[in-house]
Length: 161
Image (tube, rainbow, N blue to C red; front, side):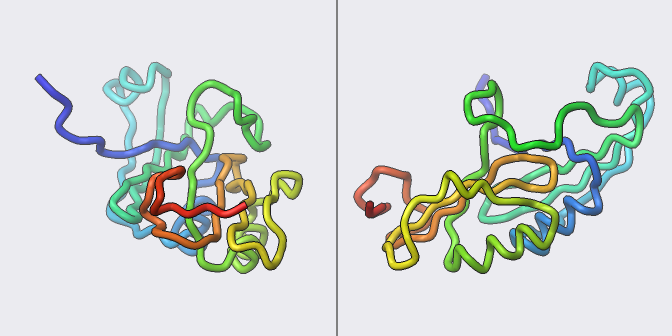
């Protein structure tokens, strides 16, 4: 037996409508489905009693993201940017064509920037900054030359200092 396919990456969000706006309208994801779920099977799968959840499935560049909004019992955790060395998902990385414009859109939509992480000046061929979504999930934003589909460190990636 083998894994057939990676189907999606799930992210728990504090406000599903705000996160939908952020991921759809700011990051350019497309809505491909949604579900409203409750009941014993949902409780069992989540390992939590009394679950009422709304999920929205988004797609972008061949990957699928599931936004999960817990109406009940609600969400837990801080709304601050996750430390990079915290176990689990650390960040989503995005190649962008206009770093400054996307940073402005992120801030306007309830996300934020971590200015101390900025690399590369205004005229540098490659510029990078860590941002975060409205719930603190880090987003690595990279503006630079090369193939945006290439693996970092490969010759096709061409990250310049």
